[in-house]
Image (cartoon, rainbow, N blue to C red; front, top):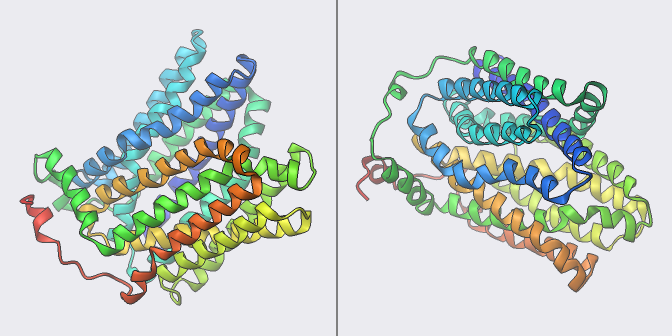
Length: 408
């Protein structure tokens, strides 16, 4: 896989971006909590500027990604992110500390254009036999930085301060842009933006998803998984405190075990990728997450809980790899950006809903009750996949002409 220029360049770029993003996230979080004396308004604003662009720009960015050359889009996005970081650093030095929020906002917006472009390049340059392995490797990188990212980000900030941390972020974006120049040349047919009717193309993306059995099933799974993850994510600290009788610091060991298991799980998925269909992989991940989630909520034993955290982390790559593989296998290249733009907000949106409801539900039905409800949502999400087991590894399209012609 590493002999493939597109794979090597995108994965190398992703490593650099992950470094920059984790340094950014923790440096800004720690700095804001210090300067505002833990003001929850400013702390919550960090999450708002990070996640709001996903709702506002995901489908827009995906539509433009389908119109523009993917290599050029990714390089320009990283360069603009680096330039914005430079401007933010100057504003910060001149005394406006709130400008640091702009660095997160701009890079988050631009990622909504570059991320679907990366998916388009995977679609173009990776064979179907290798696609699931590449997606597993992509997920493994996320797992690595879930473990190492907080450590690196905290170290850089505490050792060098906020100015250097912002500078590191900008440097990582610049290096990522440099690495992406080694991508294969964009296809000539993508030099044209095609139809100039942007709103029609955007609407075609929704129609394309609705016309596909596989993509509709994935959206149902996305919604259930997002809601399930959202319900439990803020409550893990109460698992440590209430169920296990530990201090809040014990949570870091739970999360590190979970993240390390994700890395191992990603490696296993890469090995078995050619033997297991993506729908089976996704179903295993969803059904296994149901068991581990309910178990974590009910367990009052440290060893049992840690074992379930490890198992849950091990199975998580099955979910992400299965979803991404099914998405790319069953989406024509011309619609990759728009389909990505339709599906991603579904997951993030319902995860935010889950985050909002978790505390309320915990007070109303108890901690084990919320984890059990989350497990049931994973089960419902796996049921959406049942019709997909009747299909082969790739769905035959029957809706190609209408969206491309824009005549629906």
